[in-house]
Image (cartoon, rainbow, N blue to C red):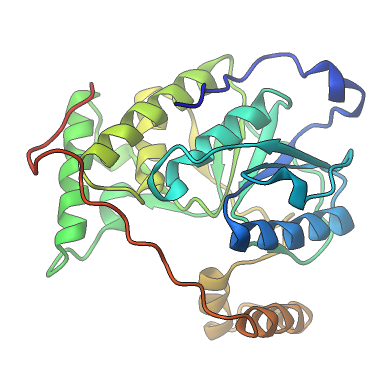
Length: 281
């Protein structure tokens, strides 16, 4: 198991002179996501003075600079879903705050300076139970709700006060050490979900860990960051919520991506052990 990088209160000597208020960060495992991260890095170099920190399996695919900090990382979780916590831990070991963005995101305009509040600021979030509605004919959702309820009982949480975090873009800022406890509990709950056959629910795990550690979590629209995301922008275009200039940029990105061959998804393994609930707490 790769050692967990804990956030510290002091930036490393190597980048102390270039320390900025926050950094962007992402995970790039596999050729597809390394290529996408190269495009993201080019966007941020053009539109932001904030550096981009990348954890990747092949650092040699990137041109490291003062604006691009690249670190070697080996996959730790099934499907890499919970490896995001390693990215955030590394970023918070160097900066007071970070903005995690998925590698397939694109930045469209200049990024304005932002003052992040302590805790988690999520571009999109919702009540954790509402997120999985409706459940009719959806055994996958039913199982996730069962796991969420077991965690809520363990940590004495009111699920009406717990949010699911859409993990494509969210900021994490230090809060007097609570961020360390949050990341440690994310690891434990994430392992619990994985051992019981649920691999891709990091948004639920983030919300549960934050609530259990009283690590603030809030919705923040983030108008300072104009972005492209396949799923989000498909909705925004249908609702005519994208201006003409951004629509042209989005169309170019979509056409470029569709010109590439389809990437087949890998089958995830079955739950470890028996079908009986497995606990790690």
